Image 1 (cartoon, rainbow, N blue to C red):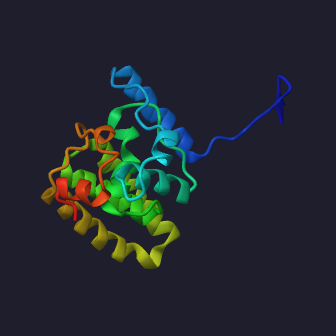
Image 2: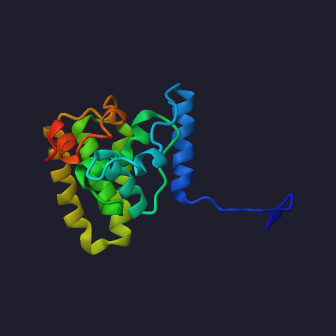
Length: 170
């Protein structure tokens, strides 16, 4: 289908979700300038937090989140610190971890949505996913990471294990 001689590209559910999140962020005055620059991270020293972040993005065929509020843009860095995957169960674990680290209503809604996705797409793994989410929540409660205020841009050149230790995530 063409509109004004341009092909229509259907946005993915994730893209639509991020646009909605960004519109709320903008309306609330919470948008921040781009934090993560994949090109800079790619050239960080091997074994560093920044290089691990770049490797996570490249290994999962992801682009960094570069718009919206700070917590959203730093989402993938928390994957790197926690080791949770980018599959639905890994995303659910990450949201549960964030709920434990610092409650956020958005994380609660995302967690519920991800559990529904898991129940529909991976019904045999629903019970395991719930258990993993509970462990991730408890891990979030016992860490000392504030997902709203941490500054990974100051930590990119440090060894990954040092950064994990800094937040009690080893």
